[in-house]
Image 1 (tube, helix red, strand yellow):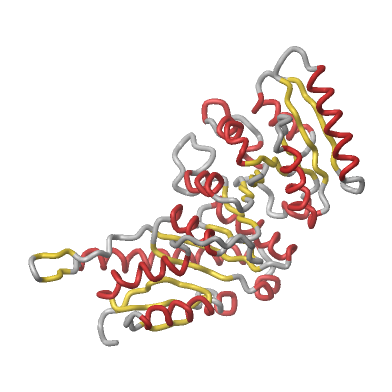
Image 2: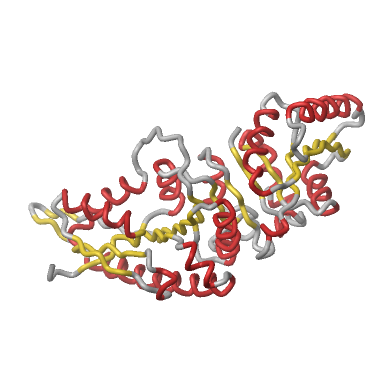
Length: 366
């Protein structure tokens, strides 16, 4: 392979070998190179290099392997996925994700996608012309991404004990593509136990409290997502004691609570069902909440949970105030409560809410 080579992706060794066999079955020569940004800390990273003229054929194979196909697999794999964009938000998410993966006995996978220049050829008559400027851009993207990833991992391993990091052997997936689309596609084929990601990314617009990629992942998958704010403490998991589930006495709430209790069971936490009464007459809500408490006590006699009712016409403000006054560690919502999620992250009303600055959100499908 004397021609100019480009990096197709950086993958864990096992996945790199699978990709190599897929490429070679299509007549595409490739070379595997060890990636060693941090010596022993990154011994699972392998870079797959191909000839630049094979890019058009190779990218679809890579994307198909990483998820861009329909798959009816429903069983989650034993790993925690942490999408990163090298921002302070994703650094915090990676720290929390590492602790959670360690607690669950799962592997952590860091996933990064960089914007991809068009790799398609440009046809002129009977001649196929490759735009060399696009490949120069690709090469520059690769170098910049490698440098940023190295800096990100250096900072991450400074925050985590080096011995723990080596024992965990986290995996790394780095590819060129569109982050939102790539993450969703990868999850479709390889559903994790949990996704941990920043509430927003480094490219979030001014006034946004939830990034577009995070929102897309939350609303388009069935895997639980833990969205981490930038100011969440590094040792957040160590002090993870209470979860608030916002209930509106809907039919699916008991199903949601059952699923939530299973999600938080490994962490020995207390679940509080919170309802905000926004009307003047709250006697009916009090009766319904008491009925919920009795039903939950009967069904889960040995589980720590409680039911609370507060009165406030401003729903986001009420939830925020309760979180602050009661030192709540996580606000849990289902994707069914899309309207509430939208209101919580509406820039016109959410600018001063405490939960956006330090309280993680657990969003799950029920």
